[in-house]
Image (cartoon, rainbow, N blue to C red; front, side, top):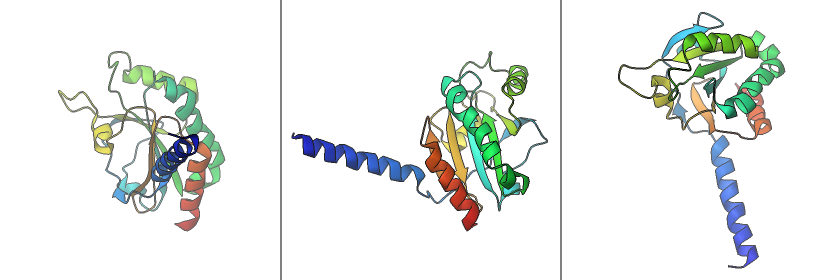
Length: 181
């Protein structure tokens, strides 16, 4: 295969992956099931209708979460401080433990949240008895952690991305949703 054809195929695949990542999926975001809230009394997704919602799925021992998504949520908390104060935007982190259950206990998570200086709402994903994966993680069909989902004012998932991603492009999506809603 010549280099031009190979380059064209790679470019096409990259474009398809990039465009599908940030395209509107037109899927109604499922309600989350939280067993405990940290940094507040909690909320339901239904109560957040009319707001843009950023949901971070994370684990406290996840390297990608500690290097990428947790700092990003803190950064967006500062970047969008005015929109959060105006209640146009809500950032919610959900601790979705699917491994290392004995280590990632709620007490350790509470200490972790304080240590990391996380001030937005953090929920602990609920486990049904006998289930390995927590309920919200299953409902959102997440691939693991970190995963970030952006939900528009109508409750539709507009972006759902596992691992690292173009944070600037996601931030532009948030800005677009805030101005078009």
